[in-house]
Amino acid sequence: MCETCGCGDPQKVPLEVQESILSGNDERARHNREHFAAAGVLAVNLMGSPGAGKTALLEATARKIRSQRIGALSGDLATERDADRLKAAGIPSLAITTGSACHLDAQLVHRALHDFSWRDLDLLFIENVGNLVCPAVYDLGQAFNVVTLAVTEGEDKPLKYPVMFRKVDLVVLTKIDLLPHLPQVKMEVIEAGLARTMPEPAMIPVSAVTGEGIEEWLSWLDQRRVSGQGERVAADA
Amino acid sequence: MHEYSLISALLDRVAAEAKAHDGAVVHHLKVQIGELSGVEVDLFESAYEMLRESTICAGADLEVIPVKARWVCPRCERAITSGEILRCPDCNLPARLAGGDEIVLERIEMEVP
Image (cartoon, rainbow over all chains, first blue to last red; front, side, top):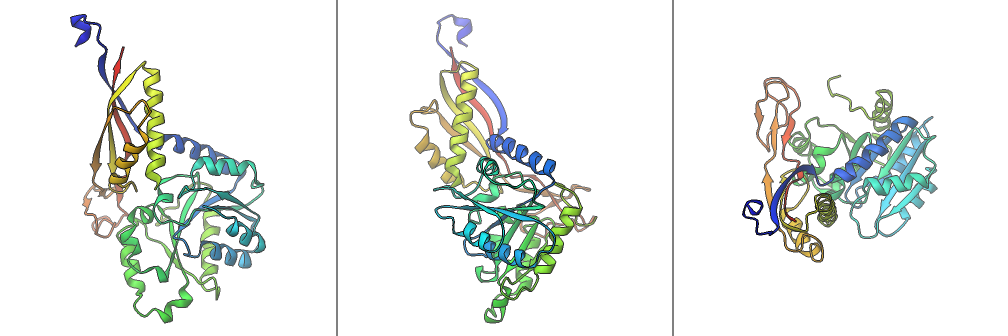
């Protein structure tokens, strides 16, 4: 174009980038993942709608867990209530207040790791902001993604939020003590939804109130620790 | 509304590329957004309209290429239709997502001196 005619006008050039817009976050997530692996800490990104029972699941976990040392980073828009609840339950915790951000990102987690004593833990839960959409987009450096789905949220949620359910390694179905009051909620409908959104569907029904299912959840965590840090466990292994 | 933070990351990236290539004005951006990326294209575009002012992209149009979700069997590569059970009926293996989770900056067109 203009380099041939000599008019001196600037020329338009295409620049092929072909890179994720999230590459900055992915890089920081990799960095977090290396830290977790080096310290032998299993990091679990715990996601779910507001009120799905993320904090209650961790409280119930603290009541039943035996020898493992657990801690939590707790993302919240405006308050430190979740972190306070977790501390009261005996889980060392630090709140990450996100302001208006609807999700945690790798940078927020990385900064929190500088202010929190996490290296001696066996399990670090990263309780994400209550939201079934945005947190699924951001890698934090976790070894596993877990989502809580409350039976009160409706059995169609896996099909309505396929991005989230595709990303998770495990669905913890919460508040199952309420099932007798919810005759319209059918377990098989939830399972059918998961089979269409999760390539390797895995679900553990629990009640934080009665403690039902919590042992199974602890075994799931145990198996992940045994199988090594940051390694996904094949369903047929 | 993570679309706003994605656009911020996009604008930062474009500014860095433009600086590295002495590009003064950006004319066009092309991005791919997958069906299962978790990005709402409408929100992504309106976030771009709002945030591009007073950046190097102020005069640049944004072209979004939507990418359909594509599930395949990892062994026989048979396509598994969205909405079906995500397991190959022949090989009994969990399907693999072969496309549709992109949030990719494909190309920048800019003016260089």
